[in-house]
Length: 189
Image 1 (cartoon, rainbow, N blue to C red):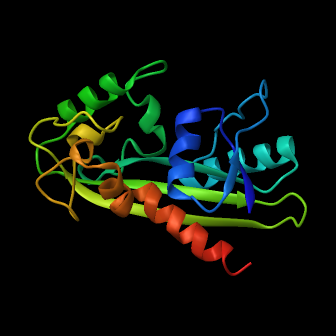
Image 2: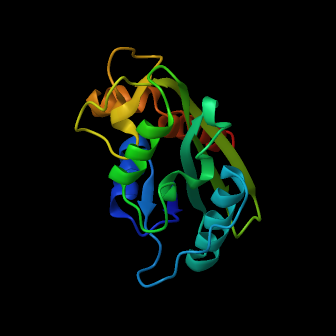
């Protein structure tokens, strides 16, 4: 099955390709503009991206929206995870803000929602994946990005997401769980 992934990001396409080896995946057409993600939930933002991608490509399209939710902060940063430290902020600034605003042992959860949109049939579907963890005592590890150095998954305690191998991370991650739910649903179509 061939799907468009609603992104221009080669890294994200490679991650989806690794998680979905039985699918042919394409990026959005070069030069196309990314839609404004102004939804108020992971679901809304994933649908915004998937609908825009399906319109641009004319093909069945998937898009994800993901982030980290901190229980002690009422679910923040949530959908604002990528720009939590301010517009134009980078992973290091966002990670530093997490360290400043939380305490070791605080409960965290990665959330990923994937939207599927088929412009031919008009079909739309959402799946969700989660990964629960705690805030590490200090950032550790160099494999991974974003908040991974401070996220200790409950399923593989004692190491951060940035210390896991690719297959270990894929087996428990929010995106891995969402992709498995998507593949299960696609198998019934």
